[in-house]
Length: 140
Image 1 (cartoon, rainbow, N blue to C red):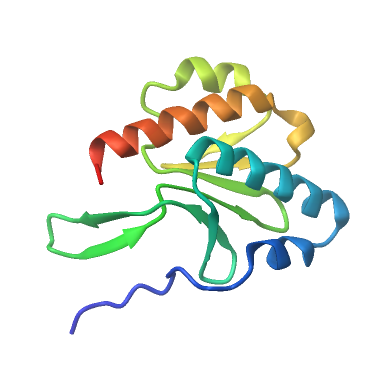
Image 2 (cartoon, rainbow, N blue to C red; image 1 turned 90 degrees about the vertical axis):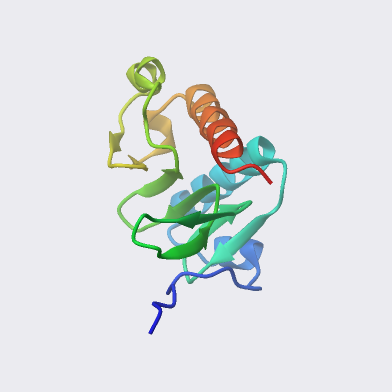
């Protein structure tokens, strides 16, 4: 039996999801990230599952044969911090990470507690690089 992904694109309203976020700083910051990533991606945001806002999508296949679909660029406005998903990871982005400001990273996740702690121009460039890499790796 094949695994069905739990996080799939929905038809839920992204503006309504963002408008419901509390507190107001988190809501305002999420709206700022949403607008920035939409500008980078050049396509509208889609709510994936209950709390991931994604832009574009790509189909992947692991060596195990498992396949799926995931957004090319995404973020999730979580309680403690915003999680920005840069699907290509951070290879080749050390120069930008050094100038970003106060943030931590995972494999393909950038964790930001407050937007005031980071340089938004650097974040935009990181998102552009990630989008370009994904378009090259997964054309179409």
